[in-house]
Length: 290
View 1 (cartoon, rainbow, N blue to C red):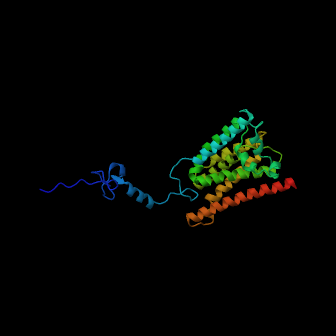
View 2 (cartoon, rainbow, N blue to C red):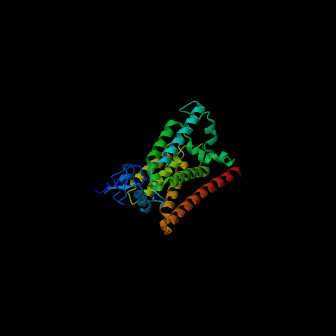
View 3 (cartoon, one colour):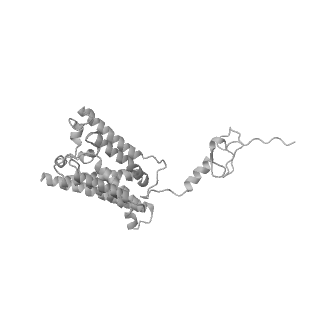
């Protein structure tokens, strides 16, 4: 009689006998070390090897696509705006007129003469302030709708860069064209995301008419209603549009041959646009103090 052959054991857990095996490499494995596949089941080692050999999925801006499709940056921006609004409402003890009696609002609101005197925190800080809950809700709803898609298409870092550059562009326009105003709100950055979505749709050869109509309606409202920062909106729109053009079109225009080269072109164009905005703010500051 032949002695009974010992049962095979899992390749990763020698203390576990198993009758299962990987259909790719054939090695025995327990149920915890196997994953369903289109044909049979693969062990975790074969899955990792397949993922390493698979082509890298990239965003429209040539960056590595995030594995987790959750728009963390959009949610974080909304959270920061809500928290800042809560802080101003607590300081003013008034939910509707949160700008009255709030030291944070007074320190961050965009007022060009104050920026010219050295309060540069207002350039970006004003983009996280809002005049009342309706102002906040409108901006955050728009950011929620468009920001999630932009973040997944461009990647988190580039999306955040477009948002911040849009804020800078809005502040630069206010410094030049609206020097006596008190400006606050994420509207400049939101308008920048509108421009970003439009550029992305054109790059993907999709119909961008709906976004163009939306932008046209919002610009018309900015022209028509008093108390709305027209130049903050237009500056943010221009900056967000140009920033996205630099990331998704400029590498092709310059014939960047590798993803790394395309990424470099995109980042350089973003940095150049940010420097131009800062330069405009600086020049306007000099003219105000001169």
